[in-house]
Image 1 (tube, rainbow, N blue to C red):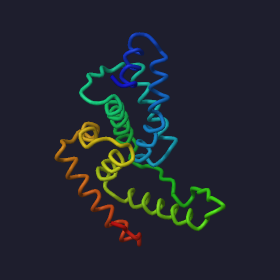
Image 2: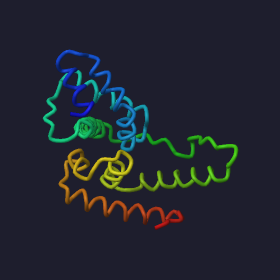
Image 3: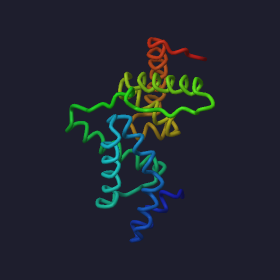
Image 4: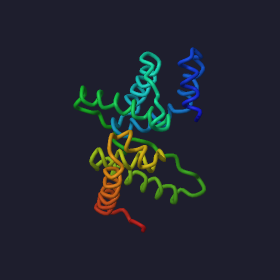
Length: 183
C-alpha cells in the first residue's frame, strides 16, 4: 500500500492529517498537470483545490484498480474537463513574458537551454490535446502507459498509438520551428 492510499484511508477513518499529507505530496504535480491544459497557473491551482475539495466532501471510494496517484489525477482530469466545457475561451499567458534566470558563469549555455525549452513548450501546445496529454503524463509525470490510459480513459493500444503519433507530431513541430532535433 503506497503512502497516498494509506493517507487517504486514514483520512476516511477520521484523521484529517491524512488529507494534509495527500495535498502536500500531490499538489505541485497536479497543478503542473492541469496547467498543461488550461495554460494558466492560477486556474490550475483552483482546479487542484477543487480536486482536493472533492476528496474532502464527496469522499469517493478508492478501489485500488490503479495507483493512488493515477486515481487522483483522473479525478483532477474530470474536474478540468468540466471546467473546459463551461469556459470555452481560455486565457493564454505567452511564454515570451516569462522571465528565465541565467547562471552568471555560463550565460550562453543557459540561454540556449532556455530557448530550447521555450521552443519545446510552444511546440507541445501546438499539438492536439490528446497528444499533449499523453506526452505530459508519460514523460513529465512518469506514468506508465496503463496508468496514462486509466487517466485518459483509453485502452493500452490507444495510448501506445497516441504516444507514437504524438512523438511524431512533436518532432515535426519542432523541425518546422527550426529546432535541431537529435536522435
